[in-house]
Amino acid sequence: MRISSAFICAGLTFLWSARAQSSSVDAFLASESPIAKAGLLANIGPSGSKSSGAKAGVVIASPSQSNPDYLYTWTRDTSLVFGAIIDQFTLGLDTSLRGQVDNFVASQEIIQQISNPSGTISTGGLGEPKFNIDETAFTGAWGRPQRDGPALRANAMITWANFLLKQNNATYVTSTLWPTIKLDLDYVAGNWNQTTFDLWEEVSSSSFFTTAVQHRALRQGIALANRIGQTSAVAGYTAQANNLLCFLQSYWNGGSGYITANTGGGRSGKDANTVLASIHTFDAAAGCDSVTFQPCSDRALSNLLNYVNAFRSIYSINSGVANNVGTATGRYPEDSYMGGNPWYLTTLAVAEQLYDSLIVWKQQGSITITATSQPFFALFSPGIATGTISSSSSTFNSLTAAIENYADSFVAVVAKFTPSGGGLAEQYSRSNGAPVSAVDLTWSYAALLTAFGARNGVVPASWGAKGLTVPTTCSGNTGGGSGGGGTVSITFNVQATTVFGENIFLTGSIDSLTNWSPDNALALNANNYPIWSVTVNIPASTSFEYKYIRKFNGAVTWESDPNLQFTSPASGTFTINDVWR
Ligand SMILES: *[C@@H]1O[C@H](CO)[C@@H](O)[C@H](O)[C@H]1NC(C)=O
Ligand SMILES: *[C@@H]1O[C@H](CO)[C@@H](O)[C@H](O)[C@H]1NC(C)=O
Image (cartoon, rainbow, N blue to C red; front, side):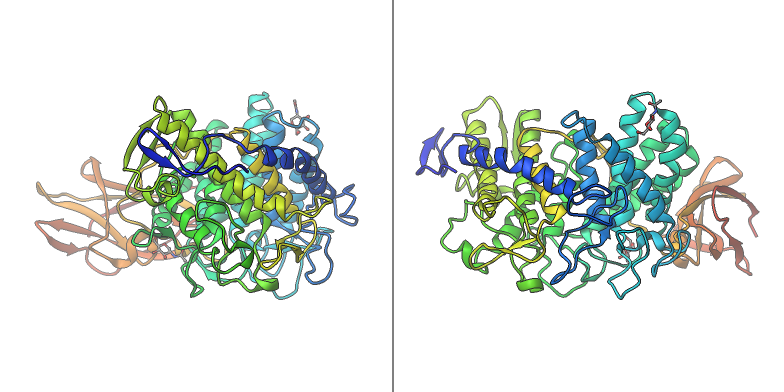
């Protein structure tokens, strides 16, 4: 990393040299990335050299068997690791990986079916976080369920499916991949609105990372379903994707400029959870969109600054480092697990978010600085003004070079604290940088490979983040219950004669029918007057009561008693035809 003294450029002071990409980081990544690739593959059965006993396609979290014992397979880690492998194969970076991907698909089909302490395949078992490496259930006490797993698995498999469709392999996609993907998407659609353990397996509440990857899964799933003609699922997924996008906004703590990672847990909320969410929902086609918290969005950059700063004073290896130079970062500042040290994968995630941002700024030919992101950009140019900087200006070049150097400086921290053999453990000591906790963490290796890819301008496939509109009011979806059965699309038709200016609404006993709230009741359309109609996604196999109401000049008139009753079917769509009473 080269840090020069301040210099003046177009009237702005830059605290960094304009040279992009540090040669010491080049050298580290050139030597480390083959080690990371080999380390990652060593942890995948059946032939990985450090994963003896793991079935084909099973990713062990780490070969460490004590203090901590990580010789298990987690759905989250596995899906993130295979997400990286699938990107490498489908983007043509490593054509040797197809057999691994086929093994992944086959093993996940088996794991989905295993009854476990979270349930069976149809009663919530997909939310089980970890399994034994021989593909049997882990039955010990654990923080379960963890609802990010099915979403991440769907994201990886859908990326694979999209690639195979381009290869004219629709038969395999429809007959083999889609049934597996659909189980996960149904689980997400049916269960997203229930509490979950977070990705660190500690806090049971709602969690930004989980919500963000669930949202991505449904959007990507909708596009795939449309592409292969599986359209019956689309309405239900669309309704829940919109609900998820709405809910996602609620984590933004605008007053403090960061994303609160969990709704529970009683912590500051500053957490690598949020940075990981941003890089794992990166969609270059969406630009710097802030509602999906894209890496270069003003919210995600402000969040990054606050997250990084949370570790400056608490790790002694960070002491004396200037505030515009990379430092060690960990999961969250209150962390005490295994000493509460910095993690390789979280420090690399910061670099990756910045590399992703650079890809987009260069692609769109501009950087926009808002009041929200100004403190981040001020790291490189104190007092920099809000506004848009075009790529034709020298400021653009200086700023992107400074940010490239800043990104590299986080990789340089990882380089400095990587032992000579190149093995990446889970953590490195907050006091001296020595590796700590589980050795050869598969996710650490995947994190190095994806950060390196982003630095080289590798752009993952788009998942549909572009141009989404956040609903004006958020709806939940609690009725789905542990059944995990997803939702069904129900059309309510009611024949009702009205006077001009009078409208018909629907409300009922479940969240998706606004819990008997006349104020929030769902508006019906009169496209086929006197039939009023609305289509609602209702949790599958759920009994509920409902009524129609009239609103006219602010006055609400309810239908006569008793309440209407219905039990939604287990799947598919359904139409109810009523007459106003
Ligand atoms: C489709 O992809 C699957 C999975 O890799 C493969 O086994 C199969 O041979 C492919 N079929 C065709 C026609 O390419
Ligand atoms: C369910 O969704 C509603 C509406 O967005 C939200 O207020 C609530 O916190 C959510 N609950 C959970 C557990 O996701």
